[in-house]
Image (cartoon, rainbow, N blue to C red; front, side, top):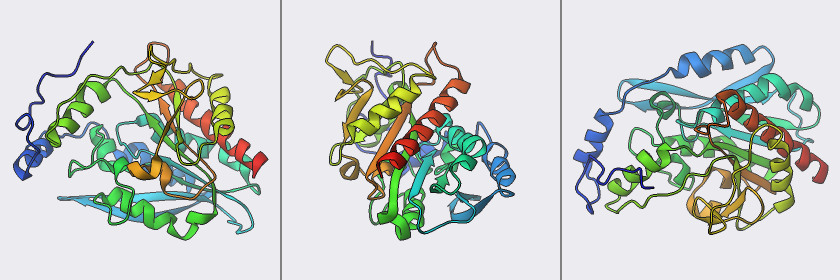
Amino acid sequence: MNTAPAHYPIGTPGKPWGNLEREEWLSQQTKHRSYETDVMSVIDRLRKNFDVEQYGSLNYGSESYPLFAIRNRDWNDDLPIVLVTGGVHGYESSGVHGALQFIEQHAAGYAGKVNLLVAPCVSPWAYERIHRWNANAIDPNRSFREDSPAEESASLLRLIAPIRDRVLMHIDLHETTDTDDTEFRPALAARDGKFSEPCDIPDGFYLVDDTENPQLEFQQAVIKAVEQVTHIAPSDDKGEIIGSTVVSRGIIQYPLKQLGLCASITNARYKTTTEVYPDSLKATPEQCNAAQIAAVCAAIDYALMRK
């Protein structure tokens, strides 16, 4: 069933947005939660056991948002590097809180085994507004490329530039929500002067592998761990999830670099994007966070066994 609006309320159908439409869109964005309260306060608690680095700052109008990354103490250049990113899409809450809870609950167990680098909330402006885009109506997760138009993406690229070739595993934590179909896809179509088609939102967890460097056994190991916590998304009648062919239960593939996705930013052998479904009647917010944590731990464990 098509739950998306017949016409997005901003812009003229078939005509890309100009400055006026973007300004109208921005004027409608309001804060629903606090980055300082929800995220920065947790990061402050972590400072006693981890190194916290400010790697950039977002400045939108009168508002400024510091960007933070967390590293283990006693960084050892002889150990492999694991990168965890969350909140690239600010509205995908379990990516942010799953990353932070992973550090609090499990990071100490990897001491002396890996170097951990975690950027838990890449898009804090969007986190506060429960949105996919930044304040310029740009999707950071289509902007991880040189001369990026999104400062969220450009800042993270600068952070990882010195270690890009040394990362063993990168896991990027995301969600697929009902609002992808009711709000964000229609908004994208309106912004670009296109027309939106309804899309079936899968009920359950799934992963996105890299078309150019598929690592199916790695993805399957993560699925096996996560299904102990929450259910795995089934394929639809076409054998697809979100319009892409299912290559194994709960696993699809995207050309990560071509699409400018966050999971493409290193040359890691093992990389994946998680997709949790927080709107499911079968899952609680706590389960969604736990699914992200289980995915991170399973991904690290597999990578260490196969390094």
